[in-house]
Structures are given as C-alpha cells and as structure tokens.
Length: 224
Ligand SMILES: C[S@@+](CC[C@H](N)C(=O)[O-])C[C@H]1O[C@@H](n2cnc3c(N)ncnc32)[C@H](O)[C@@H]1O
Image 1 (tube, protein in one colour):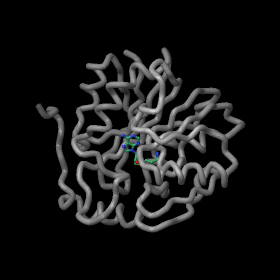
Image 2 (spheres, protein in one colour):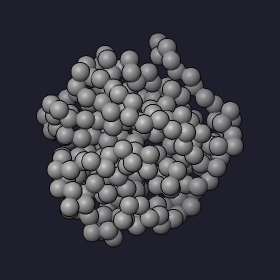
Image 3 (cartoon, rainbow, N blue to C red):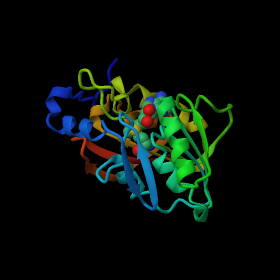
C-alpha cells in the first residue's frame, strides 16, 4: 500500500533544478564549512552553501555535550563540525557508501577532528541497546536519479531508507533524545504518519527550497 501523501516527482519534471544540482556534485571540490575545509570527491554529496548540509547545520548550533550519531555522513561535514572539541560532543559517523566513509576519515584527519567513523547501513554497525542523545540523518531526498549518472548520494526509491530509519529510531534515541531528519513530500514516505505509528512526535523546525528544487522541511523528532 502506498502512503497517502506521496507525491512522487519524476526526474524529468524537476529540470533544470535537478541537473544543476547533479552537476554541482559531479566533480571534486574543497569546500569551506564553518571553520572546516571539506574535501568532496565527485559523486559524494557536496556541502555547498545551498546544500541541505547548511540547512541542517543552521538549526543545530546549540548541540553541546551530547552523544551524537551522524548517519549518512557523506563527506563527514555535519558530524565533524559537531566534533569540535570545544563543543564537548562525542560523535560517531556512518555511511553505507565506502567512498563516503573513506572521505569522512580523510576530512577528520585533515581537520584534526576526532570521531568514530564506521561503514554501516543505518544503525547496522551497532549492538542492540546502543543509544544516542542526538541522531542526525540528512537522508537522500530524491526518488529517482538522472539516467547514466552515479548519484547514489541523492536517491532513495520509495523513501525506503527514511522508513527504515524511523522504524529503528525509537530504540536508538535516549529518553529526551532528539532526531533530525530533512523531509520532502516527494521522498515517498509519509513521515508524520510513520512517526505517529512508531510512537514519535515530529515538529518542523525549518522549511526551505534548496538547490535540489524540492521543498524540504527539517523535522525535529522525539519520543511521543
Ligand atoms: C544527502 S547525503 C548527506 C551527506 C552529509 N550528511 C551531508 O550533510 O552533507 C545522504 C547520505 O546518506 C547516505 N546513505 C544513504 N542511504 C544510507 C543508509 N541506508 N545507511 C547509511 N547511509 C546512507 C548516502 O551514501 C549519502 O552519503
């Protein structure tokens, strides 16, 4: 059964936004990000000024002294930024893409940030019972990819990654913990309904049209 609010957008309908978005992530770049210099190889999501990485970071500046998990870390930009020693966070980063994991390791080294970085499908690298105060998943928001382009960082057919993330989040968030998940109605998952089903509450703490051409909301998710 499909979710009621799913409005699947076909790649072709989003031109020229999507091609511009894809092209900006095609080539290697070194991108300044809040005191870090982030290396982004071609094909890995780039933290450009209009990226969702900035959209999320703008709303996470108060995270201090927390156990933080940055799921789908890509270049590592969000987790490494929060791993600033002065912030007192204990940060773990994961990604399903081994190239992203290697990139995050390089960026940790180059920026002298210390964090645990693991290759994992969502929470798959962690024992049952392992929990965090803050879980961030800057999830892929597109349902389809342009023909021939290897943009694995941007696609999540039918919102499967988001759905699996929400199903496991309640057992991974400490009491009083908070999850951050960008969401667009076009991702193929009815996130507000899924949150209810999993005993979570979701509040929209940011809304924007980013360079991807999708209306993106940042949801702050807690135990209900
Ligand atoms: C939009 S990018 C965000 C990258 C980075 N967090 C940032 O803010 O710049 C989404 C990332 O999620 C990763 N990803 C997708 N599905 C995943 C899964 N099931 N488990 C872990 N990571 C996943 C992708 O490999 C990609 O690096």
